[in-house]
Length: 296
Ligand SMILES: Cc1ncc(C[n+]2csc(CCOP(=O)(O)OP(=O)(O)O)c2C)c(N)n1
Ligand code: SF4
Ligand SMILES: [Mg+2]
Image (tube, rainbow, N blue to C red; front, side, top):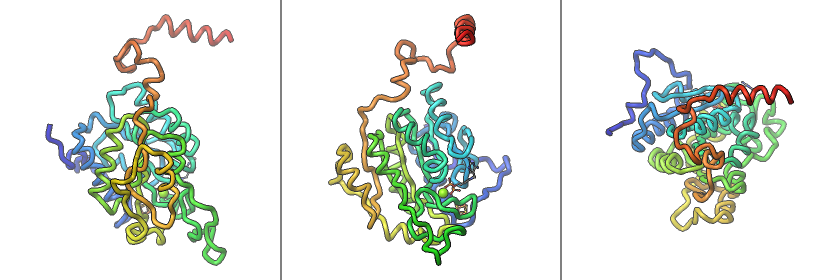
């Protein structure tokens, strides 16, 4: 099968406008996603993208894939459920730093624990873009916002470190990328999507309108790539790299392919490999179950 990036473009006949600002880092990420999916030879019909609310969360609207666009912070529960009901699909949860780590922070933690075989791609622009520039969990200290002005010292919290948190929880794949580096990002995303288990890729994505601090140049100047000497199976080494803040490492920090997945652990595929959605519902059993619960 020969797929190329164009296969993931929405047909012009559908008639849609892209609501991102000119120069936004979401555009290169969209292109990177298209070539990543094409090179993995995943048919658009086999991919489901799940997002929440925000600028990043609009990405599935602008790609030719199946998608479920739910509530702010709530991308992960439906992503887990879709994968559990139909493991044949490639499920990608994709949303912003606020959506995934702020409003969705609880789901982020508990989905790492459950280890479903899904990929989580976070457009990390270190700001709430859609709602016009408030601080998000990954906002840098000193960043001035409309409610934390520069003359009061800006945002005072230390930024949340999703990579370190995920490694400390033994997430099965943890990586960071930067949209300014297309080939490297594509390589990282290909590994993440091919990995069996929960795979996190935190992607630095400049917001050119509301984040004048963390620009394309800032990310270029303040990042470097982990090299071959980094042992991705060593959690202590991975955590040490993740805690670096003078220069932020990019690449794959950590993998643990030995963890069993949520789908495996659920037991529903132990004796029957047929996806849940294809199985007949036993009406009698279901009624008995409902009645037994109604009595308690
Ligand atoms: C429960 C809830 N809280 C707040 C909002 C308002 N809201 C919508 S998008 C958003 C911020 C989005 O920021 P982020 O997820 O970082 O995405 P970005 O726009 O930066 O890509 C907020 C606060 C909402 N829709 N629902
Ligand atoms: S506000 Fe920022 S994140 Fe949103 S579209 Fe504009 S540049 Fe992109
Ligand atoms: Mg954001």
